Length: 226
Picture (tube, rainbow, N blue to C red):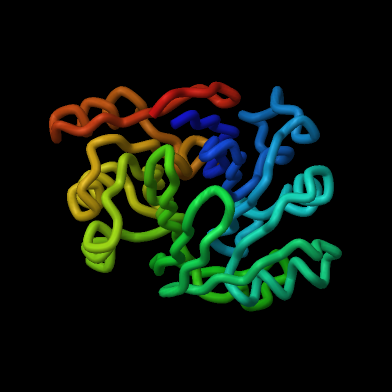
C-alpha cells in the first residue's frame, strides 16, 4: 500500500483508489513547513481524538476536498457546528462499510478535549479493511490488552503506532503492541514535533530490528510502499 507521511501523526493511505487521511495537523508544525496543505488529497479524513495536534487542519482540508470526515459522536457534532456537513459519526465497537472498504472503530487509552477545554469524547483508533490491504491506526494510546482483540477479527498487514513516549506509547510499548496485534511492519508517528517527544531514531530502529520487526520512519512529505 502507498502511504504518505505529513508529520506528527498525520499520514494518508491510498486504498482502492481512495485517499484516506488521518489526524491532519500540518500548518503549525515547523517540521512540516514544506507541505502545501491545499494540495493534499483526501476522500476520507479520520480523527482519532479532539486534541489540537490531531484536528487543527481538518476544517481547511475537508472544505478544500469535500472529504467525508469520521470521528466519535462528540467530534461529529463539533464538525457540523464548524460547517463540515460531510461528517460521519463512529464510536468504539462500531463499524461501517464505504466504497474503499470497511472501518471499525476501537478504543484508545488517552484523554480527549477540544482547544477550548470542552469534552472531546472518547479517544479512538481505527482498523481498516480494504482490497489493497488491512491496517490499524491506534491513535494516541497507551499500551492496552484490548489490542489482543484486533487480530481476532482482522488480519493486519501493518500498524501505525505513536512511539514518542511521554504522552503516548514509547518504543518498548509499541514493540509489545506490535506483538499483540500480530504485525511485523510498523509506521512510527507522534515523535519529534515538540521538545518533550524528541526521539533517538537509530535507537528506536535498532530496538524494533532486535525484536524482528520493521519500523518505518519516512521523511515528512515522502511516500513509501508498506
